[in-house]
Amino acid sequence: MTARGTPSRFLQSVLQNGVGRYVCQLKRVSFIFSKNGQSSLGVRDFIEDGVVDFAKKNPGIVVYVSTQSCRIPKVVAEYLNGNVKEELVTNKTSQQIAELITKLSNQSGLDIIRIRKPFHTDSPSIQGQWHPFTNRPPSKDPVGPQAK
Amino acid sequence: MAACWTLMNRSALLLGSRNLYRNVLFTQSREKKRWMKAYTLIMARKKKIEGEPAPTPRSQQPNWDYHAEVEAFSARLKESFSLELLKTAFVNPCYLCSEEERRRTLGLDCNAAALNLRDNTELREHGQQFTLGFLKDWCKSNFPSLPEAGVEAIVGYLTEPKLMCHVARNLAVEDLAMTGKFPVPEDILQGTFFAVIGALEQSSGAERAGLFVRDFLVTQLIGKDLFDMWKVVNPMGLLVEELNRRGVALPEPRLIQSAGASTVLPLYFVGLYSDRRLLAHGPGETVLAAEEEAARVALRKLFGYTENRRPLDFSTPKEQPQKLASRAVTSG
Image 1: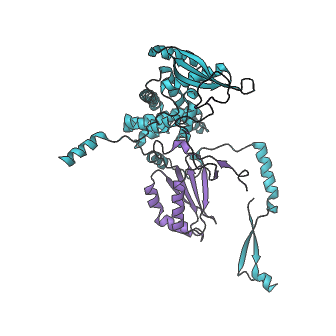
Image 2 (image 1 turned 180 degrees about the vertical axis):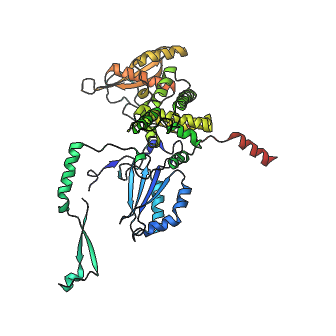
Image 3 (image 1 turned 90 degrees about the vertical axis):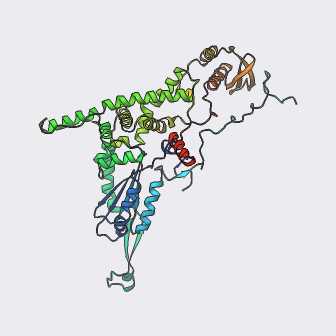
């Protein structure tokens, strides 16, 4: 749809992350897959090879691995700001799932919608924003053409 | 709407009556599912009568391991907490009450199933004292000319329940806090956060705890104006007091600019002059409003809390003695 019909937000960070210290915003990752289904083959391979390394490299993320008999394997990512993101990993390879997990761990958890401006600042002006009276000498007469 | 799958058997189309289920082609058709209508309508009516389902705490949803979560909490914040202290910090007295109630109603003997948990009252008081003290010292060192009332206002703003709960929720303290009620009430969540700070101070020392408070509470000051946090009713009176204290002449207001005096939105700029030198000027819709605004601008300049002041320092402190020692080793 158009920009007006779809939601949008401003560029922001959760709790000024990065100003003080950087906190990884992903808090929990759950792998839900089936033990025998053919679509969960990639997930099963990833759990054999890569998940332990991922968990060791990111000690701040809790990794849950649970099997259920399901047709579509999922990765559920929960973020510190409360957002929960589910990604379907049907028929993905182990490599693709590893990339997906890295991408999820680098995200902030804010909604992936149109960002209105690619910049944000809390101190927009150093010398003071210009207004029509900025460099005008003081006068008690009302506004009129300045004498040269 | 969810998509529904229709099975199209290509070979059946080709061969007519013979049913060959090879070369099956699934196509997705996005119509509404007719057979779901009754169920969907009944569920919608039920939701309208009963309202939204009550929120459940994360610990009662699937995939939850408390010990792993506490360890991850400590690792995520890059702090080394003593896990025992941290687990104690999350236990609130209301949780202990409700647990004992539950055990009593279930008929368990008090001695047989004793609750071996300590609650976080001491840690909470400790943490609160530490936080208030640290924030006060921080304000005084960064804004030396800010008076006591201003420092108290800033510290009060940073330790108010609303802001602390916002910080605690975005640090996953609410998931780990053990309370009697869910959703966790604001004052209890604030108490849990103070207890976490107390636990950090007892585990890693005052310096690390100070850095923690700086990185998570003080950063909430970014983008905030002084008089949003400090409600000053009479800025002109306060300005006169401040100038008297510094021994500077009293401010005289003068109209500097005016525009649109007879319109719906007039604009007046009033300047405050002390000893014939401009202190500050401010705009307003009436001359009195402009004078008040000019007094506020003058106060911001005096207290050093302008928008264009030097940004606050959030860098990690380098270890000074180790640096000097390494230099001595390399040179000697």
